Image (cartoon, rainbow, N blue to C red; front, side):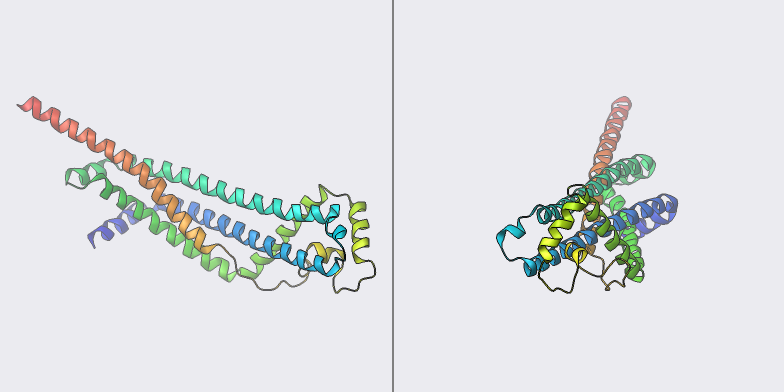
Amino acid sequence: MRFMERVTSAIRYRKRIYFGELLLAALFCLTSLALWSLRHANANMRQGFLNRLEMLTTNGQTTSSRVVQAVKAGYASLDGRYVATWWLAVAITLLLSLGFGWWSAHNRRAESETYLILGKSPFDVAAQYVVESLLVFVGAFLFVGLVTFLLSDSLNHLLMTQSRNALTAEFSSTVSSSTATQSLKALFEHKLTEFTGPGLFFPGPPPNAPQPSHQLYGFVPTLLTGCGTIILGQGTAALAELSLLRRQLLHTASSTDQVNS
């Protein structure tokens, strides 16, 4: 009980610092949710493309055309890019957590010395500092979750548009428009379908049409990863700094005893 009282009191006392951490945590949550949702949209469109391709495929040569392979490669490349960007965001968050953990323990030296002199271990003190940041992160996560829920339709339309644009750019960089036109003509020859050429590569409603309602994805990985970076980053840095401070205090106390004796 007293532990949580110290935690909440510290957050209130350093509200400006923790407000800055709140904004960074919210930015990480938004980035993570957007990337997970983009991956999900990309996977859905890829599966839709493969399903529609089967409807048009009459022989093995059709599925191995340059355009079809370019589209498949585009989907795979985008997914890899989203994954790499997510891991980059995690790495940056971990580095920031390391820096904040060291700065927090160093900047709160007087408070830390008091706790250590009173008999608390470096682990106990570091745990308090980490729990403070965890509460701030959970608060940012809940706030972002509420905002994204209220704006889910607009955010979904924005992410779907971004996914289409990214795939179009990836596709255009490898296949010329003339090659794409010829391939589409061969695919749709003597076939009656409810979709046109763009509908094959980008399954789903057109960009300007109403989009189906979808939720954002990645809430659990975002929460667990965010908490993990705080525990690992801030916990490690704070524990190292507090352990060094404790050794300094013990050395000072030992030197004082030798002088007095």
